[in-house]
Amino acid sequence: MLTSLFKNIVYPPKSVSNKKLSEAFAGKWVVITGASSGIGEALTLRLIEAKANLFLIARNEEKLVQLCNKARGNGCEARYKTIDLRQRDELDAWCETLKEELPAVSFLFCNAGKSIKRSISLSLDRMHDFDRTIDLNYRSMVSLSLALMPSLRNAGGSIVYTSSVSSRYPFAPGWSAYHASKCAANAWCRTARHERKKLGVKVQVAYIPLVHTPMSDVNETYKNLPAYSADEAACILLKLAMSKRFRYKPWWAL
Ligand SMILES: NC(=O)c1ccc[n+]([C@@H]2O[C@H](COP(=O)([O-])OP(=O)(O)OC[C@H]3O[C@@H](n4cnc5c(N)ncnc54)[C@H](OP(=O)(O)O)[C@@H]3O)[C@@H](O)[C@H]2O)c1
Image (cartoon, rainbow, N blue to C red; front, side):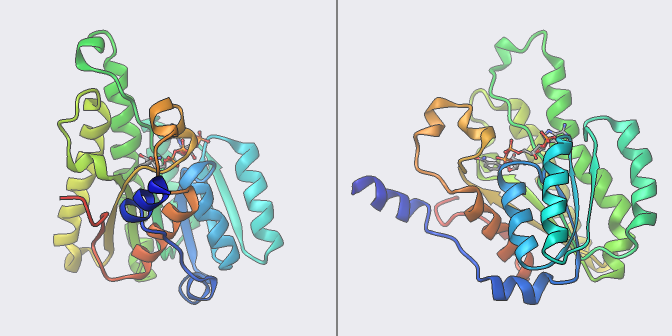
């Protein structure tokens, strides 16, 4: 009883009607990174219901094929790309072909991400932790955004970045790699917001609180805490994308 009261206060329920989603997304091209699991998969399922055309990106091919088949079965156009978004050269080369392939994109959800919790004192021989978080959580978002900017402009489109509310408290012990990468992306988005007139593209950030997904459930403590479901987090991203607001943050976040 007390737990559910706490959950409803800290994590007020999130939903969005399929009718509203169809009005906003049907027939439009939507690119989603990290579509194979957790929040990205939930987002994809919602957009399939809304009859959006989907371009899905992740490494797990079996899952992307399954989602594309489901999308096509529901009358959507669907394509996918399996790529490790940390591989800079491969990503940059592919971005060149992607912009030709998708001349008009209405929404780019930059959602793929990886969290690492490890103190700096335990990271002395682990520079790769800092490289892989920055490459996935920050650099891949910038690379895809730059490549798709003309396509987004052609469609009056938006970029929506899945950030974390914890990056608003970046001094939390153990989170130096994750928070630094998320803060870099936050800063890029905030700058893009102020350059919007020249860019011609809306950029939005969602500071998402805890969500039960394969990423967070690795941590036993988080697994047992109240949190949003992946579908609720997807609803937060979709509502933000449909709005004129720059950001989503929970009411309690300073
Ligand atoms: N869960 C939370 O509590 C929480 C809270 C705030 C923000 N977030 C953010 O939400 C986003 C989604 O996370 P999630 O919780 O849904 O985690 P998840 O279930 O682990 O999903 C992560 C997604 O990112 C993709 N990905 C990971 N590494 C990749 C790589 N090297 N190249 C390409 N794709 C890669 C994964 O696909 P493959 O493995 O198939 O490549 C997967 O689709 C992340 O940006 C995360 O930082 C999560």
